[in-house]
Image (cartoon, rainbow, N blue to C red; front, side, top):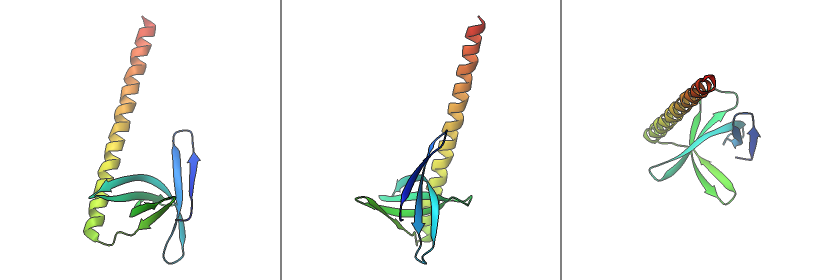
Length: 114
């Protein structure tokens, strides 16, 4: 990884990194999430021009982060499953929060009508 950039839009902060691959190519990716699984750290990255995220192990060294390819297919499947569950839970929480706020707005409108 060569650098990290924070992009702010109206709704949320987006953190991007540039990933350097072994073949010398680079790809800008959004950092979607990090998780710990079996005492290892993992990151989900979404390339800016793609719809599917990639997973890597990672280690932090002072101000640098080293991405680690997940070579073991069983480990990779467990990591992807963990991220899928994480994103599903995040989506459900957002849906719940949206419904909760809609109820508040309805209650406020009813109070104002009284």
